[in-house]
Amino acid sequence: MKRKIRYLTPWERFKVRKKYRQLMIFFVSVMSVFLIIALYLLYISGVYDNICKSVYNFLGITEFSMVADDYPLSVHFIDVGNGDAILIHTDSVNIMIDSGEYTLKGRSAGYLQHFGVENIDLFIATHSDSDHIGDFSHISDKCEIDRIWVSEYAPSENESSTEDEKLLYKTAKDKNIHIQRPKTGKYKIGDMTVDVLSPNKQFGNDNDNSLIVKISYQNISMLFTGDAGKAAEKELLDKSTDVSADILKVAHHGSKTATTEEFLDAVSPKYAIISVGNDNKYLPDRYTIERISNSGAEICRTDLDGSVIIASDGKNIEVFKENTQ
Image (cartoon, rainbow, N blue to C red):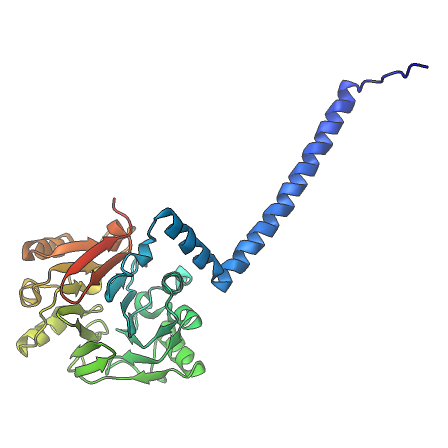
C-alpha cells in the first residue's frame, strides 16, 4: 500500500521555524555566557595577556605598552585623564609617581598589570589631590609596594583632611607599606638617582608643597613637578638649584599657575609632557603652551596623544604615543 505523504501547513512550518530559532538563540546565549566567563577567568589569572602577546608576536604586531621592551629605561605617562600616573621602569627598579583618580576604577593599575609590573620599589605621592593619589589602593591591590614617599610637609595620618589621603594612609597601614618623608637631597634607588629638590619649606598651599624630584639614569634626566606652582619654582631658582632636565613633566596639567619662562629657561627640556583630560575646557592654558613651544621643547599631551612612553638607552631618547589625533 502506498504511503500517503502529508505536507506541513504554512502555520505548522512557521511554528517549526520559530521553535528552531528559539533553540538557536538559547544555544548562542548559553555559549556567549560561557565565553564571557572563560575570558574573565583568563583575564584575572593573567593568562589572557600572555595569549594576546603570543598572538601579537606571531603576527608581528607590537603592543603599545611593550614598545619600549628593548630599552633599559622607559617612562610611561599613563593616560588617566585629569590626573598624573607615571611609571619609571628599568631592569632593576620600578618607581611610580602618583596614581590618577579613584573614579577611573584602576586604569593605572590595569596598565601596570598589562605591562607586567608586579613590584613597585618606590611610590611617590606628590601631594594629596585625588587626581594624584586617589587610585593608589587599586595599584596596591595589583602590585607589591616596598615604600611610599610623601612630602615632608604633608599632613600626618591623624591630620589628613582629604578622603584620598586618609585612604592612602589606611592602605599603607593595612598592607604594612613603610611611609617616608624624604629630606631634600640625593637617593640611590636601584640604577637610578632620585634627587628630592622641593619642598625646602612649607608653602601656603598644598600644590606648592608637592614633592619635586629629578630622576637621573646614566645621561638622561627627568624632572617631575606634581602640581607645584610659581612660588615653588621661584624658590628653586632663588637657591640656584640645578633643575636642568631632558624631560619635564609639566606642573599642574599645564595650568597658568606654573611653568614660568624663567623656570623653562633653567630646565631647558627637550620634551615636555602634559598629563590632562580631553574633556578639560580650561587646561592646558594656551599661554603656558606658548611658553613651552617658545622654549624649543617638543610637547606631548595625553589628551591628544593618549599614553606617552619615553624610552632611552641612557644616551638617546625615543618617544612613542598610543594614538594621535
